[in-house]
Length: 463
Image (cartoon, rainbow, N blue to C red; front, side, top):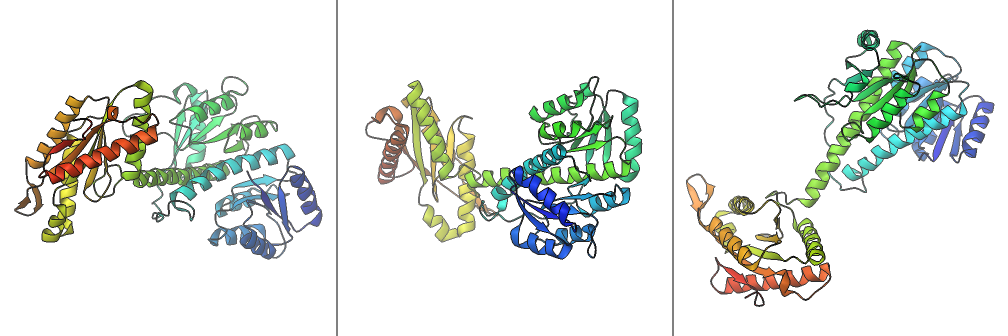
């Protein structure tokens, strides 16, 4: 949650009042009487949120906001502007400059705190993803290039089609985004091929009954396909009690129907931008996790992931009383391939061998690259006879056809396999079982190498 709030206001009384209210709610507060002081504190302290007065002498709030957004050290801070002047142009200027919200004085305490909680939830989700995707404490992957910003999609959800069409007509001149009229019953319809879910849902607060919009929002939040979409509640009646409830139930924003379409369009585009940032970070995290468990050359699971999966198979084997077979496979005389033809040729051999092995296994079998030219294969729920047949088939699949390593140049490759079965092991704990069965298969592999290579050798207990 938000911990530190920087209050920026040229009126000392206003700063004190906000400081007391926020302090009573558990926030740590900092104060600044002017723009330059705000910039200095923001760079030094990196507050979780800045409450910034729009009208100040000298450097006004809009100028301060632009300076904060230009500085990489403060560009991503949460910034909420406020003003005693309910001036439409000031509000629009603040939103264009990158304000996360604009509140008019006097600020209702419940609405303020609910809005802070809503912003904090969004910021925490993005901050957590950012750390995993590439932050200094994450996986350390390079940050991707800034993507080209494509057209966003906003669903306008009302009970009457003509109302949604009215809003689309009103918003379209102020936005390049696409507005989609939508009835509540169609929100969860299956998407057509190539059609994606909207980035933002603009939902009328009362859909057929009081609170109907908030109920639909809750459903969106619990639905797999829409849980990451942004939601803006359209307060049709200007109910002042609606905002705290809407924000605490998960709304990203709330606008009164009396607000100008231009401001609403700006707010919706801001929601699209932040939602897209979350999407990019989620995709980056997914790629990071995939890379963390995948061998980059062959595309197979790597050693760490392979052994972790083997541990799960061992746990199920013990719980269900079913055997599994483990093979350790090693390419024969692979060093000579690299020495004679180069590492590029060796890489081609490894990729082709990995593909042939995977093509000759069942969907639920485990295969991983656990070393330079060494692979692991686990066959769950398998008998000795079945595992022998599979092992021989793998040997034949590698030997049957030469591997192409260059134009008009091929190379005959063979593989040796050590095979062990789980029923050989006496261990009753999954980790000990994995260690014992892996050791047996590894020793069987050494026997296969010593016996002339290109063959399958059973561990002595299995034989």
